Length: 564
Ligand code: FES
Image (tube, rainbow, N blue to C red; front, top):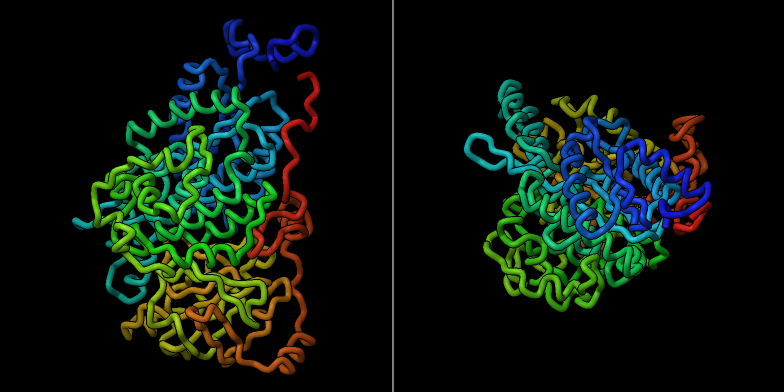
């Protein structure tokens, strides 16, 4: 009872809150519900979250709670430098402390853009108060020259078309205005849509909440319902640890395979599980996804966009289709099980959501985990976004120590490259860049694009945007800056990729690699003070979720709770 206490503590809590003009009955001991919003004009995907918060408040009031909205760090994916991922853990740390330090009984998490969803889930997991997530929803489909265009995915294509001379600068300028034409996050199955789906698959947001477009009235209806639900969770003391169990993570991993979701889900789910102490390993993503076909025909792996997925039946229709591949008795924020939530979910368009018996892509076409002397702690590849003909490939390395170094020569018509080349972009991991940016899917060299080559094998210790496509090996661990073998590759070395066998091999002898290692020196740290210094001193590798070592695990809500 935060605001109902007598004596000095109660007076302190109430007196300053009364400056906002609340009537006395809100201080009667009712559940206090924080609404953590990542609204910011510098995070355009989240700019409507104020309105979503108003709907949440309605629901909290209706259910007898006391809603209080507060800001948490907004991370605008397209604007933040050097990469929004550098700040995911900072958002998680900030939100964790705000939730714990303020007089709250439960929290509603408002997110949208890529890192805001995992950042807030990590925070809620560490605090342990009852929590519900409401993601802001995808934009309406982009429309250009009579066709749908997907955010991010179209940009990669237009960049290639511009480099290859198939589009003019003026055409590109017009096209970019046709893409993000409403509030909301990217409407391809990029990282934001993936993480919204993961939140729903984990049971942390209400059914259909991932897919209602940001401007759809039902998004606001769902937000109001979430306000009612959080009060119920507080009253019944259902916490994130009750919902985000090992079974819930297994469900999320399988749903990610079925929706053709982003490889970024691997890093984020590992980090969230780490906060909860749920045993989850990189290899689980491969093992659990192998028998799950891709059911959803969405860009970048397929044709449609989130708006189409919504009208086809949303995530519940996909989860219903997965049947016994999911733990149907896993608990959700509705306090009903996954199975109960989705058992009657209809599908209205079989070209968007394919049946399990006749899937869009066969089982095993999701994210694969690779190992070998080039990635002793693992690497991933999104098979559904790759060229099938390159999944088994051997070629000579062309090595760059940064994406900038590559971009300097990418348009060079004399660049020594052919369709078999394996492009290596390194020092892009958590410590190296820093922040493990989405730079792995650098464009194919202009020389090859002009020859009609649309894809080559690229390997990197960074990440790839969930909206991107191509045969790109990502998240190589350990990263080059941490002394991983990727640092020892030289231009001209043979590299073999065998996705069916799950291997990535540098064809260089151990003795030669030992000589190269003896001559290798670690790059200097990218910063000597501030957040970047703290981050690079403590960040873990991709295979464990790239969380900070001192943030892994949970502190619980009770820390420092004076005056309760
Ligand atoms: Fe925010 Fe894509 S840039 S979701």
